[in-house]
Image (cartoon, rainbow, N blue to C red; front, side):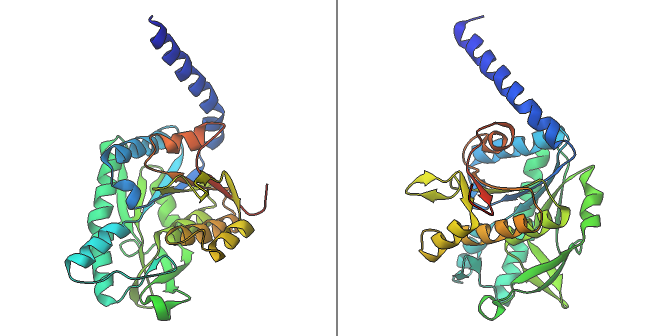
Length: 287
């Protein structure tokens, strides 16, 4: 065996030995993974992420995917002469916008993500909160600003649990309540589902390497520090609802919450199955 092949073999063996305790720990546990739309643009990144998700399922971990697709929705709005508007990182949703959200997220994006997982070797099923009546939804707290944006008050967990043995559920973030359909922020959906299932991990797949301070990734971010960074304008945009929903999940019993870079090859597996990990882990109190 050539020296370079010997080195590669040693590296692979070390990786397997390091991963084994984590595989044993997580068999039978539930991971909720939120895939951001921006992180799914690159084909190579998509393929690497899908293979990682399929591997989790193959080693006995229950996986639920919630996807975004905000860029696709915004593009579709612009194509129709509409201007996307956001408040606190969440989309302002009037009736015409809601129609596009349903068409793009519950249609094309959900099908694309489901097909991507299936093509990499696992059975996935595309669903949404409307098609399976997964959630009870009420208007968001700031509905006067956001329009038809909802928040989940309960999750029908038995419907999800009935799928986990055979499938990876792929959920589009819309739902029903009070006789109408609501757009729901995907991060909030992920948090609500993870909380209801008491998931072992909630993982946000981003297009940035976690939360950064002065271009350096923060390995552990406590809630008080995160609130201060939001207040000071150091954290803005779509990262704000991720943090709020992530800390809510921790308070509601989810064991670990991570934010990782989906554009980095094998970042999902590195976070779960290595000692060092990648990205930012959210914690309620300073470590």
